[in-house]
Length: 234
Ligand code: F6R
Image (cartoon, rainbow, N blue to C red):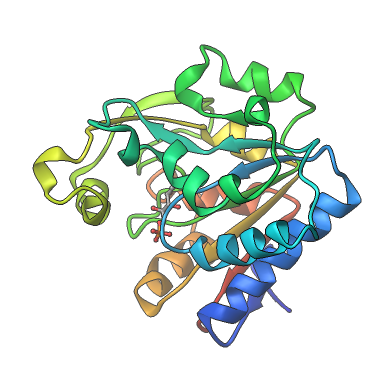
């Protein structure tokens, strides 16, 4: 564990090790506080961790029955259910757990997601990936710090990055709803995960550069309990 800027950095040797590290942190949180509220991302980076958690859950090693899981973000104009982040989380993790259906939340389904989160006790642990342009959740460059859950137009670079899920740029949704920067910073603990050398430059800007809306992930350095897990040197 190294101290880089204000964020404790856990540098692992491989994607598998990163996945284990993240899974361990989630398991610890769930065991210490079974009623935990989690903020969960979609994307490629958490998949290895979700596979581990799915396996532990199916073995009966994890009890999610009192946990609450909040999606970070969701498309608003997905053409089919299979394209939604709710579907992604269900098929990669939640479907293998005993999180009650009523404790799984999408920002698309609520007028006041932040109030809902608050009413469930507030986020305990929120996991975030980072986009090549520095986005966290769907807070694209230019998002102000004072932002709560809101709807957004996606940048072309984000739509391009997500197109593998959609079989062609033209059908990638253009709009999404996302937790804002303040929503994320209100979580008691944060974990930022980044895998692959192609994330190194933007992660370094986020961790070591100025705090600026141009790199939304840089706002994370304002949080007192953020851990960064990578599988490369920073
Ligand atoms: C997804 C999300 C995004 C991703 C980011 C990194 O719910 O909020 O911010 O975390 O785009 O995606 P991957 O992990 O695919 O590189």
